[in-house]
Figure 1: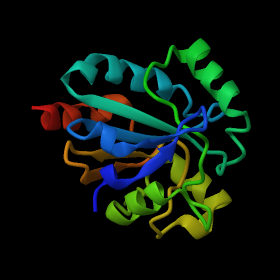
Figure 2: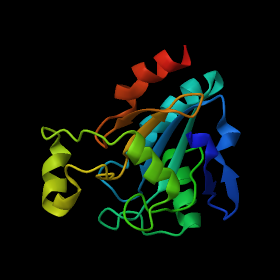
Figure 3: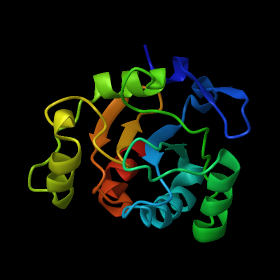
Figure 4: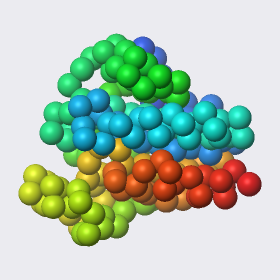
Length: 177
């Protein structure tokens, strides 16, 4: 199985096959508009603009499971991303990334790259205080968790929320060749 076998819902409500991205390097990110990490949109957009022509595609999936930090409608989310960060990479329909209603794509991503949430991360104490049940599991711990997927649809690596787009750049460059 690969990421390319999944179908996701666009922000307009239609279905899109991730097979459409076959041959491209993917960075899949659960995003939120009212999070302390929301400024990462700027770095993600910069990374996208610098590497899109070489085959990088960033896919944003809004999620409201972490502190209610993505409360808006899909139209409001699209507007926020465009107006505040000039985002041009795709932002899909709002999803759950954990729990019984988790999007199948995220169930797969989590199983392929369970993560190794760093206890020295500044976010660790916050997760420990607000979501202790998530520690030591494959759950997405917070907004802006990133999954790097190669051109064949194989999950390569998971980056926890505090990993910035600049910190991911070297891996992107390597995989783009």
